[in-house]
Length: 135
Image 1 (cartoon, rainbow, N blue to C red):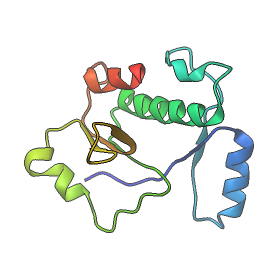
Image 2: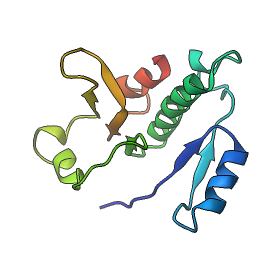
Image 3: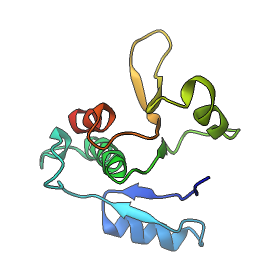
Image 4: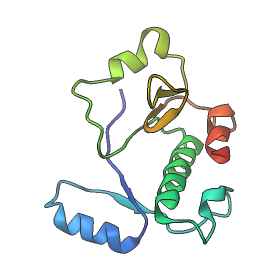
């Protein structure tokens, strides 16, 4: 059935080092992305970008990178809590063949919230992976 693993994404190696030291063993993995990967073209990685924009670009970069390796990824912002196991819903019924699951930000507007995303069985060269190259 697969396995679970948590990877926290920061913008510098120093932030990862500090986080791992402070976590008391609760965090086992940390990755950082502080600049552009030449294989990933994203306007967020311009040197003049502010840190928040860099973090959004980093999020899209890692999800794109995971799709390139066939890894299904549940991405949650740090302020998101799911009080139940969402995987039975993702893996059965209408959602089992959906490659990207997201939610809208505010019900009254058409705006996607990238703080909650699940990517499953996405073709590395397909439209879901391509979307993360364009966002």
